[in-house]
Image (tube, rainbow, N blue to C red; front, top):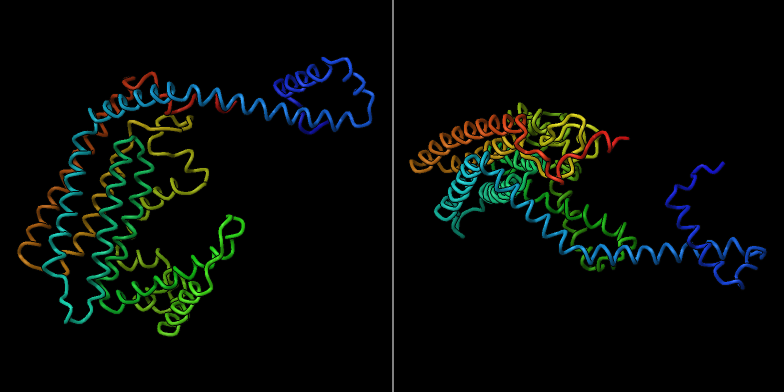
Length: 376
Protein backbone atom coordinates (compact mmCIF):
# COMPACT_ATOMS: atom_id res chain seq x y z
CA UNK A 1 0.00 0.00 0.00
CA UNK A 2 1.11 3.52 -0.74
CA UNK A 3 2.67 5.10 2.35
CA UNK A 4 1.04 8.43 1.39
CA UNK A 5 -2.55 7.67 0.28
CA UNK A 6 -4.35 10.41 -1.61
CA UNK A 7 -6.85 12.49 0.31
CA UNK A 8 -10.21 13.49 -1.13
CA UNK A 9 -8.90 16.82 -2.46
CA UNK A 10 -6.01 15.11 -4.27
CA UNK A 11 -8.42 12.59 -5.81
CA UNK A 12 -10.70 15.39 -6.96
CA UNK A 13 -7.80 17.12 -8.73
CA UNK A 14 -6.77 13.91 -10.49
CA UNK A 15 -10.36 13.20 -11.55
CA UNK A 16 -10.62 16.71 -12.96
CA UNK A 17 -7.44 16.21 -14.96
CA UNK A 18 -8.68 12.89 -16.30
CA UNK A 19 -12.00 14.41 -17.30
CA UNK A 20 -10.17 17.17 -19.14
CA UNK A 21 -7.88 14.73 -20.95
CA UNK A 22 -10.68 12.32 -21.93
CA UNK A 23 -13.16 14.99 -22.94
CA UNK A 24 -11.62 14.84 -26.41
CA UNK A 25 -12.28 11.39 -27.96
CA UNK A 26 -8.86 11.50 -29.60
CA UNK A 27 -7.26 11.52 -26.15
CA UNK A 28 -8.98 8.32 -25.04
CA UNK A 29 -6.37 6.36 -26.89
CA UNK A 30 -3.91 7.74 -24.33
CA UNK A 31 -5.17 5.19 -21.83
CA UNK A 32 -3.58 2.44 -23.92
CA UNK A 33 -0.37 4.27 -24.69
CA UNK A 34 2.88 3.38 -22.94
CA UNK A 35 3.58 6.99 -22.02
CA UNK A 36 0.16 7.57 -20.41
CA UNK A 37 1.59 7.74 -16.83
CA UNK A 38 4.08 10.43 -17.87
CA UNK A 39 1.40 12.45 -19.65
CA UNK A 40 -0.93 12.06 -16.69
CA UNK A 41 1.80 13.29 -14.34
CA UNK A 42 2.45 16.26 -16.62
CA UNK A 43 -1.26 17.04 -16.69
CA UNK A 44 -1.50 16.94 -12.92
CA UNK A 45 1.49 19.26 -12.55
CA UNK A 46 -0.04 21.73 -15.00
CA UNK A 47 -3.39 21.53 -13.24
CA UNK A 48 -1.81 22.18 -9.88
CA UNK A 49 0.08 25.16 -11.29
CA UNK A 50 -3.07 26.62 -12.84
CA UNK A 51 -5.03 25.99 -9.63
CA UNK A 52 -2.29 27.69 -7.61
CA UNK A 53 -2.37 30.69 -9.91
CA UNK A 54 -6.15 30.88 -9.61
CA UNK A 55 -6.02 30.65 -5.82
CA UNK A 56 -3.36 33.36 -5.68
CA UNK A 57 -5.51 35.65 -7.83
CA UNK A 58 -8.47 35.03 -5.51
CA UNK A 59 -6.38 35.74 -2.40
CA UNK A 60 -4.95 38.97 -3.80
CA UNK A 61 -8.36 40.13 -4.97
CA UNK A 62 -9.81 39.68 -1.51
CA UNK A 63 -6.77 40.99 0.34
CA UNK A 64 -7.82 44.67 0.65
CA UNK A 65 -11.12 43.78 2.31
CA UNK A 66 -9.51 41.17 4.53
CA UNK A 67 -6.73 43.54 5.63
CA UNK A 68 -9.18 46.36 6.35
CA UNK A 69 -11.23 44.07 8.58
CA UNK A 70 -8.16 42.75 10.39
CA UNK A 71 -6.75 46.25 10.94
CA UNK A 72 -10.03 47.52 12.31
CA UNK A 73 -10.21 44.56 14.66
CA UNK A 74 -6.61 45.12 15.70
CA UNK A 75 -7.13 48.81 16.40
CA UNK A 76 -10.13 47.96 18.55
CA UNK A 77 -8.14 45.31 20.42
CA UNK A 78 -5.20 47.64 21.09
CA UNK A 79 -7.54 50.41 22.25
CA UNK A 80 -9.23 47.97 24.62
CA UNK A 81 -5.82 46.78 25.82
CA UNK A 82 -4.98 50.31 26.89
CA UNK A 83 -8.03 50.51 29.14
CA UNK A 84 -6.28 47.97 31.37
CA UNK A 85 -2.59 48.50 30.65
CA UNK A 86 -2.48 52.11 29.44
CA UNK A 87 -1.32 53.64 32.72
CA UNK A 88 1.41 51.04 33.08
CA UNK A 89 2.56 51.46 29.49
CA UNK A 90 2.60 55.26 29.91
CA UNK A 91 4.76 54.99 33.02
CA UNK A 92 7.04 52.57 31.17
CA UNK A 93 7.46 55.08 28.37
CA UNK A 94 8.04 57.90 30.85
CA UNK A 95 10.74 55.86 32.59
CA UNK A 96 12.32 55.00 29.24
CA UNK A 97 12.45 58.64 28.13
CA UNK A 98 13.93 59.71 31.48
CA UNK A 99 16.72 57.12 31.20
CA UNK A 100 17.43 58.09 27.61
CA UNK A 101 17.61 61.79 28.45
CA UNK A 102 19.81 61.05 31.46
CA UNK A 103 22.29 59.36 29.13
CA UNK A 104 22.14 62.24 26.67
CA UNK A 105 22.66 64.79 29.44
CA UNK A 106 25.68 62.81 30.66
CA UNK A 107 27.34 62.52 27.26
CA UNK A 108 28.23 66.11 26.42
CA UNK A 109 29.75 67.34 29.71
CA UNK A 110 31.74 64.17 30.36
CA UNK A 111 32.88 63.28 26.85
CA UNK A 112 36.71 63.31 26.99
CA UNK A 113 38.42 66.12 25.13
CA UNK A 114 40.59 65.20 22.13
CA UNK A 115 43.78 65.97 24.01
CA UNK A 116 42.87 63.62 26.88
CA UNK A 117 43.79 59.90 26.98
CA UNK A 118 41.30 57.68 25.17
CA UNK A 119 38.54 56.65 27.57
CA UNK A 120 37.54 53.17 26.42
CA UNK A 121 35.16 52.73 29.34
CA UNK A 122 33.25 55.88 28.41
CA UNK A 123 32.92 54.69 24.81
CA UNK A 124 31.72 51.25 25.84
CA UNK A 125 29.27 52.52 28.46
CA UNK A 126 27.67 55.08 26.17
CA UNK A 127 27.37 52.60 23.31
CA UNK A 128 25.72 50.04 25.58
CA UNK A 129 23.37 52.65 27.02
CA UNK A 130 22.27 53.73 23.57
CA UNK A 131 21.54 50.13 22.57
CA UNK A 132 19.60 49.53 25.77
CA UNK A 133 17.41 52.58 25.11
CA UNK A 134 16.81 51.40 21.55
CA UNK A 135 15.77 47.91 22.63
CA UNK A 136 13.55 49.38 25.34
CA UNK A 137 11.68 51.22 22.57
CA UNK A 138 11.21 47.92 20.76
CA UNK A 139 9.87 46.38 23.96
CA UNK A 140 7.28 49.14 24.26
CA UNK A 141 6.13 48.59 20.67
CA UNK A 142 5.62 44.88 21.36
CA UNK A 143 3.80 45.61 24.61
CA UNK A 144 1.34 47.98 22.99
CA UNK A 145 0.73 45.49 20.17
CA UNK A 146 -0.12 42.66 22.57
CA UNK A 147 2.99 40.47 22.37
CA UNK A 148 4.32 39.86 25.91
CA UNK A 149 6.71 37.00 25.11
CA UNK A 150 8.19 38.96 22.22
CA UNK A 151 8.73 41.87 24.61
CA UNK A 152 10.31 39.53 27.15
CA UNK A 153 12.66 38.16 24.50
CA UNK A 154 13.85 41.71 23.82
CA UNK A 155 14.22 42.31 27.57
CA UNK A 156 16.75 39.49 27.48
CA UNK A 157 18.96 41.70 25.31
CA UNK A 158 18.75 44.62 27.75
CA UNK A 159 19.72 42.25 30.56
CA UNK A 160 22.77 41.13 28.57
CA UNK A 161 23.71 44.76 28.01
CA UNK A 162 23.36 45.46 31.74
CA UNK A 163 25.54 42.47 32.64
CA UNK A 164 28.28 43.50 30.21
CA UNK A 165 28.07 47.07 31.45
CA UNK A 166 28.47 46.05 35.10
CA UNK A 167 31.43 43.87 34.18
CA UNK A 168 33.17 46.65 32.27
CA UNK A 169 32.45 49.19 35.01
CA UNK A 170 33.98 46.89 37.61
CA UNK A 171 37.15 46.05 35.68
CA UNK A 172 37.90 49.34 33.96
CA UNK A 173 39.83 50.50 30.95
CA UNK A 174 41.60 47.30 29.88
CA UNK A 175 38.43 45.19 29.82
CA UNK A 176 36.61 48.04 28.04
CA UNK A 177 39.40 48.19 25.44
CA UNK A 178 39.22 44.44 24.92
CA UNK A 179 35.44 44.59 24.63
CA UNK A 180 35.59 47.20 21.88
CA UNK A 181 38.48 45.46 20.11
CA UNK A 182 36.52 42.21 20.05
CA UNK A 183 34.53 43.65 17.15
CA UNK A 184 37.38 42.38 14.94
CA UNK A 185 36.60 38.80 16.04
CA UNK A 186 32.90 39.13 15.34
CA UNK A 187 33.49 40.70 11.94
CA UNK A 188 35.80 37.86 10.99
CA UNK A 189 33.27 35.21 12.03
CA UNK A 190 30.57 36.96 10.02
CA UNK A 191 32.83 37.18 6.98
CA UNK A 192 33.69 33.49 7.24
CA UNK A 193 30.01 32.57 7.35
CA UNK A 194 29.28 34.78 4.38
CA UNK A 195 32.05 33.21 2.34
CA UNK A 196 30.80 29.73 3.23
CA UNK A 197 27.21 30.33 2.14
CA UNK A 198 27.27 33.17 -0.38
CA UNK A 199 26.70 30.84 -3.33
CA UNK A 200 23.63 29.21 -1.77
CA UNK A 201 22.33 32.67 -0.91
CA UNK A 202 22.84 33.83 -4.48
CA UNK A 203 25.35 36.54 -3.54
CA UNK A 204 28.78 37.46 -4.81
CA UNK A 205 31.79 36.55 -2.63
CA UNK A 206 33.55 39.23 -0.63
CA UNK A 207 36.18 41.11 -2.53
CA UNK A 208 39.62 39.71 -1.77
CA UNK A 209 40.85 43.10 -0.60
CA UNK A 210 37.84 43.53 1.70
CA UNK A 211 38.32 40.13 3.31
CA UNK A 212 42.04 40.79 3.66
CA UNK A 213 41.33 43.86 5.79
CA UNK A 214 39.03 41.82 8.04
CA UNK A 215 41.53 38.95 8.23
CA UNK A 216 44.42 41.25 9.13
CA UNK A 217 42.42 42.94 11.90
CA UNK A 218 41.49 39.50 13.24
CA UNK A 219 45.10 38.32 13.27
CA UNK A 220 46.29 41.55 14.87
CA UNK A 221 43.71 41.15 17.64
CA UNK A 222 44.78 37.58 18.38
CA UNK A 223 48.44 38.62 18.37
CA UNK A 224 47.73 41.38 20.86
CA UNK A 225 45.28 39.67 23.19
CA UNK A 226 46.00 35.94 22.80
CA UNK A 227 44.22 32.98 21.21
CA UNK A 228 41.50 32.93 23.88
CA UNK A 229 40.39 36.31 22.61
CA UNK A 230 38.96 34.54 19.57
CA UNK A 231 36.18 32.95 21.63
CA UNK A 232 32.71 34.53 21.62
CA UNK A 233 33.23 36.12 25.04
CA UNK A 234 37.02 36.01 24.96
CA UNK A 235 37.36 39.69 25.71
CA UNK A 236 36.22 39.02 29.32
CA UNK A 237 38.91 36.44 30.22
CA UNK A 238 41.12 38.70 32.40
CA UNK A 239 38.10 39.64 34.54
CA UNK A 240 37.10 36.04 35.26
CA UNK A 241 38.60 33.63 37.76
CA UNK A 242 41.48 31.56 36.43
CA UNK A 243 40.29 28.54 34.49
CA UNK A 244 36.72 29.82 34.09
CA UNK A 245 35.53 29.54 30.50
CA UNK A 246 34.43 32.90 29.06
CA UNK A 247 30.65 32.60 28.66
CA UNK A 248 27.82 34.99 29.24
CA UNK A 249 26.65 32.89 32.18
CA UNK A 250 30.09 33.21 33.81
CA UNK A 251 30.12 36.97 33.27
CA UNK A 252 26.57 37.23 34.64
CA UNK A 253 27.59 35.35 37.77
CA UNK A 254 30.69 37.51 38.21
CA UNK A 255 28.54 40.67 38.20
CA UNK A 256 26.07 39.32 40.75
CA UNK A 257 23.16 39.61 38.33
CA UNK A 258 22.70 35.85 38.03
CA UNK A 259 19.64 36.00 40.31
CA UNK A 260 17.78 37.08 37.15
CA UNK A 261 18.71 33.81 35.43
CA UNK A 262 15.15 32.31 35.89
CA UNK A 263 13.68 35.28 34.01
CA UNK A 264 16.45 35.04 31.43
CA UNK A 265 15.62 31.39 30.88
CA UNK A 266 11.93 32.24 30.56
CA UNK A 267 12.71 34.93 28.00
CA UNK A 268 14.93 32.51 26.09
CA UNK A 269 11.99 30.15 25.54
CA UNK A 270 10.40 32.75 23.29
CA UNK A 271 13.58 32.95 21.19
CA UNK A 272 14.24 29.27 20.62
CA UNK A 273 12.40 26.35 19.01
CA UNK A 274 12.05 24.17 22.10
CA UNK A 275 8.66 22.66 22.94
CA UNK A 276 8.40 24.56 26.20
CA UNK A 277 8.25 27.85 24.30
CA UNK A 278 5.10 26.69 22.51
CA UNK A 279 3.45 25.55 25.73
CA UNK A 280 4.32 28.42 28.08
CA UNK A 281 3.94 31.71 26.21
CA UNK A 282 3.33 34.60 28.61
CA UNK A 283 0.18 35.56 26.71
CA UNK A 284 -1.27 32.03 26.70
CA UNK A 285 -4.22 31.89 29.07
CA UNK A 286 -5.58 28.53 27.90
CA UNK A 287 -3.10 25.78 28.86
CA UNK A 288 -4.39 23.66 25.97
CA UNK A 289 -4.41 26.44 23.39
CA UNK A 290 -1.92 27.56 20.76
CA UNK A 291 -1.16 31.27 20.73
CA UNK A 292 -0.76 32.62 17.21
CA UNK A 293 -1.46 36.32 17.73
CA UNK A 294 -1.72 39.13 20.32
CA UNK A 295 -2.85 38.56 23.88
CA UNK A 296 -4.41 40.85 26.50
CA UNK A 297 -2.36 39.48 29.41
CA UNK A 298 1.22 38.75 30.44
CA UNK A 299 2.88 42.17 30.21
CA UNK A 300 3.95 42.81 33.81
CA UNK A 301 7.14 40.75 33.81
CA UNK A 302 8.58 41.90 30.47
CA UNK A 303 7.68 45.55 31.04
CA UNK A 304 9.01 45.73 34.58
CA UNK A 305 12.04 43.61 33.69
CA UNK A 306 12.94 45.96 30.85
CA UNK A 307 12.72 48.95 33.18
CA UNK A 308 14.85 47.23 35.84
CA UNK A 309 17.59 46.38 33.34
CA UNK A 310 17.44 49.81 31.72
CA UNK A 311 17.82 51.33 35.18
CA UNK A 312 20.87 49.15 35.83
CA UNK A 313 22.42 50.30 32.56
CA UNK A 314 21.71 53.93 33.42
CA UNK A 315 23.17 53.51 36.91
CA UNK A 316 26.48 52.42 35.38
CA UNK A 317 26.59 55.53 33.21
CA UNK A 318 25.67 58.09 35.85
CA UNK A 319 27.91 56.53 38.50
CA UNK A 320 30.89 56.67 36.16
CA UNK A 321 31.18 60.38 36.95
CA UNK A 322 29.44 60.98 40.27
CA UNK A 323 28.05 64.43 40.96
CA UNK A 324 25.05 65.88 42.79
CA UNK A 325 22.86 66.07 39.69
CA UNK A 326 23.48 62.43 38.75
CA UNK A 327 22.76 61.30 42.31
CA UNK A 328 19.44 63.17 42.32
CA UNK A 329 18.54 61.72 38.92
CA UNK A 330 19.21 58.17 40.07
CA UNK A 331 17.14 58.70 43.21
CA UNK A 332 14.18 59.94 41.17
CA UNK A 333 14.54 57.07 38.67
CA UNK A 334 14.61 54.55 41.51
CA UNK A 335 11.34 55.87 42.88
CA UNK A 336 9.78 55.95 39.42
CA UNK A 337 10.89 52.37 38.84
CA UNK A 338 9.04 51.26 41.96
CA UNK A 339 5.92 53.07 40.78
CA UNK A 340 6.16 51.39 37.37
CA UNK A 341 6.27 47.97 39.04
CA UNK A 342 3.28 48.64 41.28
CA UNK A 343 1.21 50.03 38.41
CA UNK A 344 1.99 47.07 36.14
CA UNK A 345 1.14 44.59 38.88
CA UNK A 346 -2.26 46.24 39.44
CA UNK A 347 -2.90 46.24 35.70
CA UNK A 348 -2.03 42.54 35.55
CA UNK A 349 -4.59 41.75 38.25
CA UNK A 350 -7.33 43.76 36.51
CA UNK A 351 -6.62 42.16 33.15
CA UNK A 352 -6.64 38.65 34.62
CA UNK A 353 -9.96 39.31 36.36
CA UNK A 354 -11.45 40.70 33.15
CA UNK A 355 -10.24 37.71 31.19
CA UNK A 356 -11.81 35.28 33.66
CA UNK A 357 -15.05 37.25 33.42
CA UNK A 358 -15.10 36.78 29.63
CA UNK A 359 -14.24 40.37 28.70
CA UNK A 360 -12.28 39.27 25.64
CA UNK A 361 -14.82 36.74 24.37
CA UNK A 362 -15.24 35.92 21.59
CA UNK A 363 -11.51 35.72 21.20
CA UNK A 364 -9.47 37.82 18.83
CA UNK A 365 -9.25 35.78 15.59
CA UNK A 366 -5.48 36.17 15.82
CA UNK A 367 -5.35 34.92 19.37
CA UNK A 368 -5.70 31.37 20.66
CA UNK A 369 -6.89 28.68 18.28
CA UNK A 370 -9.43 26.14 19.44
CA UNK A 371 -7.13 23.53 20.93
CA UNK A 372 -9.50 20.63 20.23
CA UNK A 373 -9.79 21.44 16.53
CA UNK A 374 -6.11 22.22 16.21
CA UNK A 375 -4.91 18.98 17.79
CA UNK A 376 -7.45 16.60 16.23
